[in-house]
Length: 215
Figure 1 (cartoon, rainbow, N blue to C red):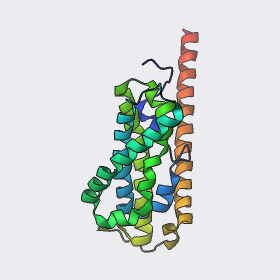
Figure 2 (figure 1 turned 30 degrees about the vertical axis):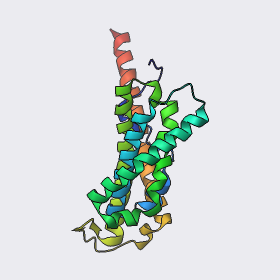
Figure 3 (figure 1 turned 90 degrees about the horizontal axis):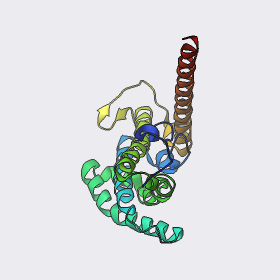
């Protein structure tokens, strides 16, 4: 399938990061990723549900009306949630699953599955679509894990089972408000990095044009 969409599989990491640049799927990160373990549980379930849902939803006939397609996408994601939950449980343990709580089933209706599929992914070739999906997954997982690790360090003085003694703690980071602060700072850094990259590319382009003119 031909497409006019231009991008790279790495766009989901920074340029179109669904949490930091788009402000979507913040709930599971801000309220759910309270430590390393809960962040890992959310990341595993999100990655499995999103990747396999996008891969399978591609076969849904486009002749169906949009509303019906979205309902089918949600049903497919719901079916994948069960094995994804069991895999996450075996990888990170029951404790992490319990900590993540209601923020695991919420991932079934995430923006990447219900929106990006129609606006972006399904306009790409199948292989490139999967690469882009992995990029978006990596972007979410990176933000979720960084948030969980920061909270684990400053609240529990550890990263999972590894002791990290900072000499002080910040209990407020465990709250939803603390999660907003962490994600807000990360969003600011992400946008600054993106803007710096854009400016660097413009300068390189201008330098190249200037050299061509002088020649």
